[in-house]
Image 1: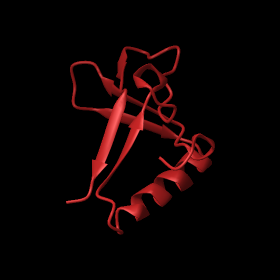
Image 2: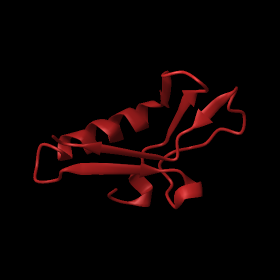
Image 3: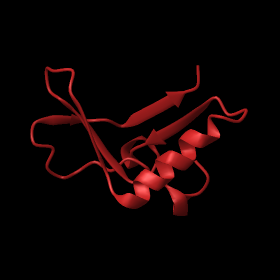
Image 4: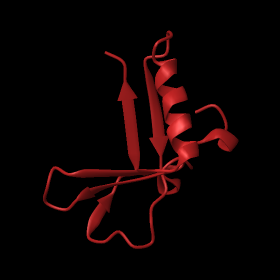
Length: 79
C-alpha cells in the first residue's frame, strides 16, 4: 500500500458456514480500491490488505460481527 494516509478502509466478512462474502466500502475506499486495481495493469502483480490484528490498517474489523467471520488478509493477484 502506498501510505497509511491512503489506505483502504473496508470491512470484509464471511458468513459462518457459507460461501458468502460481504464487503462494506465508503466512497473513499471505493476510490482507493479502484486506484489499487489500476496498479495491476502495470508491472505490479498483486496488492495486499491487512487488518490491524495482522499488522495492517486497511481492513477494519467491526466490534459487532453479527455472526460473521472477519477477514484479516486479502491478496488480489494479476493473472
